Length: 178
Image 1 (cartoon, one colour):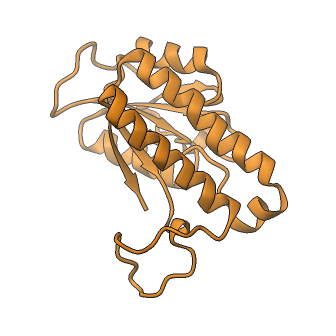
Image 2 (cartoon, one colour):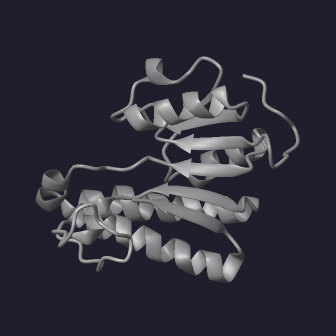
């Protein structure tokens, strides 16, 4: 798919990690419908190539592969990243915590290394309400105490904290969707 070679605030080229998964593919489709250029980066470990919209560019790679991510960011002149790639099952995270730290935390560190090297200044993290543990109120206000009760929630909290530091030290603008 041909993407713009320059960026404007009203039309951006957006890298969607995990874009072959359910939420990522719907997000990619919605971004395309709103006139953005979309690049999906996915290792297809749980996603499906057929879920990637035809109008999106596709890069078959792992977020932990800094070289591949840098290549995609540069080739497609990416303005922003929406990060869905993660292991996301609470029970599984408790049975295999090392896998969750490797995929979610180490993978996100590598991704963010590439993002900051490339000078991309906009980043959206698909986080989780699991950061709040057992909520004392529903709906959960964002002011609720952060108290993850699973490895999955803890890994997402670690990524959010890292994003906070990158915002302070590199000027990366980010949002964490819980």
